[in-house]
Length: 106
Image 1 (cartoon, rainbow, N blue to C red):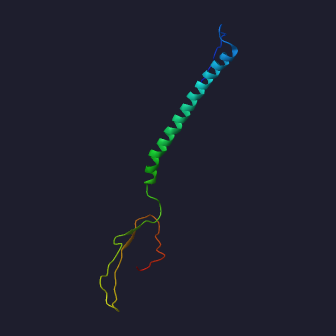
Image 2 (cartoon, rainbow, N blue to C red; image 1 turned 45 degrees about the vertical axis):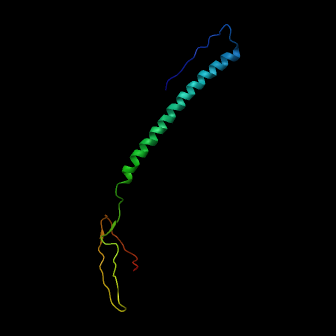
């Protein structure tokens, strides 16, 4: 952190009120510079997070991951009383056990 020192010398044609105003103007400029640096830092942090988060989210989540090769089956015209059979292939591409708890025909 850098220390800033100001030397205020009395001026011939300037009163005390004008000197105080001049002093506060200098202090205000320093505060604006510090605030700008903080805002630039926050902005760069947000941009960095924005660029890095998608890479982290793109990684596969641990756990089961279902993969169904054929998602729908159309039996076309079915006569009453006719039995239709079809097999859907379900694969688990994840690292944990896949539990299928409920299946409902459509």
